[in-house]
Amino acid sequence: MTPKLLPRILLKCLLLFAASVAVAAPPSTQPSPRALQFPWMSVSSWYEQHAADVALAEQGQARVVFLGDSITQGWDSELWQQHFAPLGAVNFAIGGDLTQNMLWRLQHGDVEKLNPDLLVVLAGVNNYLRDRTSPENTFLGVQALVIQALDVYPNAHLILHGIFPFGAEPNTAERQWVNATNTLLQELGNLERVDYYDIGDYFLEADGSLSPSVMPDFLHPGSKGYKIWLEHLLPRVQSSLKALPASN
Image (cartoon, rainbow, N blue to C red; front, side):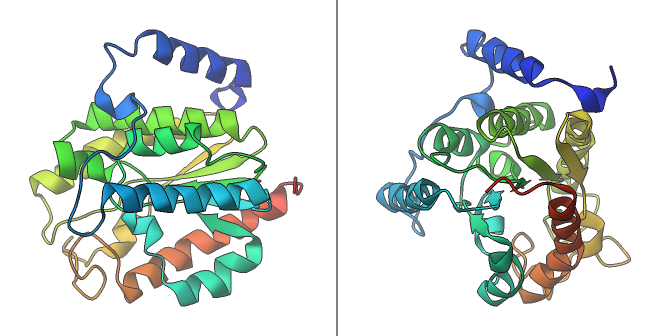
């Protein structure tokens, strides 16, 4: 059996195994709601955003589901409406989310009646920014999220992004963390129904630095950054949808 033919029953077994060792598992794999207050988002606001996502999920009409944090939530509205909305896409990203927050949301209503054909996932950077989580434990959190998403959306194909580079300069601890984590994440591309896609180099200058014209705060894409992301993601989304029978 080739890696791409990993059966769904094995995904079930992995979920059951993860549940059986939850006490020893790192926090990145343990579903939990938002607990910290931030100046830019209260806990109550987080629950309100989650409730809005649940309301969308209850409509059961999305063909493409985006899962992520503020980088995904911040898609330029004009680009989104022009290119992704016509494909039947919904954005279930919430700023500041760790992998464990996304896992919790999948288990508490971000599914409902949805039967999407495609998932687009970008996760993990906040685990480092918030908790300095190691590449290995961040990988385990993203892996748990991918397995959970494949399980609750059984007819969906999944595009998993490598974590985007952040920080102005190359060869920093932050960049080393991104590279080490993405080296692990690329192995998830061997799962059935998963394509791993790392576009990080397209955001960088020739010397490996990040320009503020691409990411003004050296973390979140600006208008130019989202155009770069769109240029490389949209063809993948379109080709994936063409290759899949519509389930909605």
